[in-house]
Image 1 (cartoon, helix red, strand yellow):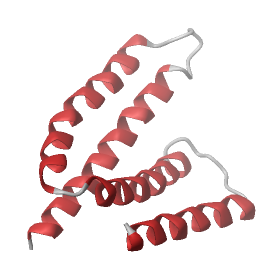
Image 2 (cartoon, one colour):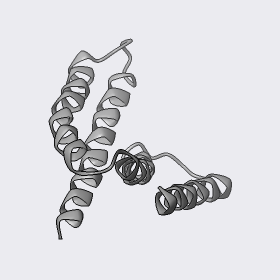
Image 3 (spheres, one colour):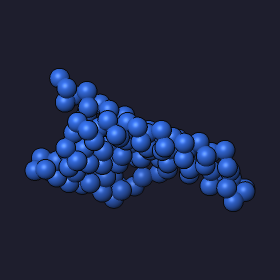
Length: 111
């Protein structure tokens, strides 16, 4: 049961990191060169997630953590890109995302 709790933490931290990235992207989309409030919020989210990473690193192998983090990050980037930023994906991009997910899972299987 302990492994599932840490897996949930790793996936949650991946989501938090991608949300921080989304705020930083938002900071770059205005008429101004940078919208500071979104940039600072994104940077604070990164900084706060460091405490979560500390606890994850104490209890999970580095290689295992990296695999679940990578898969979560890929999936959350795609979801936020499509649903929040209204990115359009073509068939090649879907195939690339699927291939990346398979590669990450295979890496995790042998890590």
